[in-house]
Amino acid sequence: MEKQNRVLNGRNEIKNFLTLKWKKELDYKLKKELWGFRENRIAVRFEYEYRDLDGNWFRAYGNENWEFDKNGLMTKRNASINDLPIKTSERRIK
Image 1 (cartoon, rainbow, N blue to C red):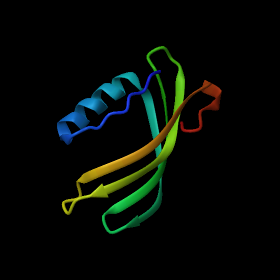
Image 2: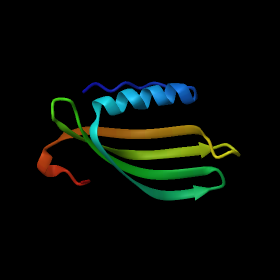
Image 3: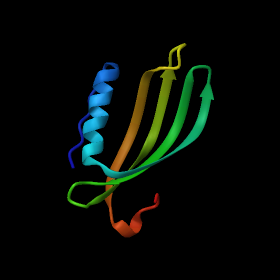
């Protein structure tokens, strides 16, 4: 599966991106763990699993850093994501 790096600008682009993503990433399960926070910033570790339209399973994992404005809306998101195919028997999040 080819992944594309791109910068999303604004809520509409984010909504459109996620709508398309979740049409292709079925049975999506997500786990996040808080690493730390200070003022308007949060760092998390994440892991999610999904299957594609052909029934192949994948696991994505990595780290994210978020920054929020005074209204609680995210203004920045930096993520390092690794994505790999897995067997159904290797799933960890059910």
